[in-house]
Length: 429
Image (cartoon, rainbow, N blue to C red):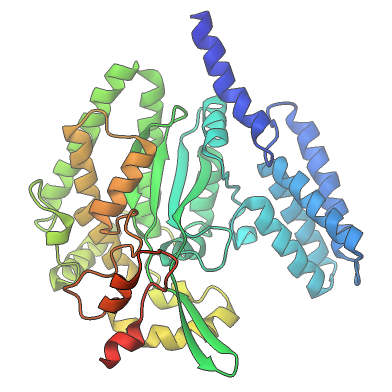
């Protein structure tokens, strides 16, 4: 027993000491808050300088790193400092610079609108999960959450899920947040000449994993869903994680198996479109009009039964792409070309919940060992998203598709650094 306690202690303490960007936040909460306030005030002073020296710029980076190391307390203090500067009429350039530091402290773009702190080290997130007895919400995505051009799903999450006040408060209070890229996001570039270029991610899917402090994935939510469905899922995880903490490991495995089995059964009873046990995702037709009809019916049913729906529940893909005015100007022409092919959030949500997630439930039902973090992530991308991570083209170049890679480009090299698509070249032939 003493050996087990020692090992558990090392599991908690060692990652916290080794992670450069994270310090121990287990001591006096008041002292950490005071330290964060002092550092945030110092950051305000440094960013207010009109022509900062190189040394002052380095100091800004240093203070930002110290605030990130304080975790959520550092983020909260810096956001409050930004609000103070804004109310007193600070120069816009100072506010923009502070916004950039807030994104670095939080670990995501558009952080001030969300007030969520994200860990980038899974080992640190697991240690925090054990200490605070909270589940980990781990986002796996193409690209990086703290960059503008991450995959489309993650930009949707930043725009409509994480900025939702109810969702943000719930996640901040009950979860340890973590993200980790599965690979770089493919970027398509259209060169208009004279220095004018249009850059846009062309493919990408994200998945939220619910992870215990021991690193076991107990559930996953593939793709994007509406804010209401996301909130329902997050709330269900709290009960599941609480049960996980209260049961011996072997008993919880059986409970987890029944939990997934029951959810898949409910989904199959609710809609005849739900993927069958003997079906593959590749057998489904996501543009079948019945998905749209089922999504509309489901939306009406939910509205009748739940008067407390979250606001902005069915944003369009057009709105999701417009995360900033300058980006909108660049993306809108491309969006207009593909608008008819982009599903509404409610339709995509229904397909992901009834076409993809029940297949994941089947994995848990058949195999009690399901839940390895990396193995399950790879399986989700390969079998649910049909984007094998070991494929340098991420499934974009099957030979039976008319718009894909030029076949000669495929044969010329297996280097994944080659351009992902040659749409103009392919369409011209």
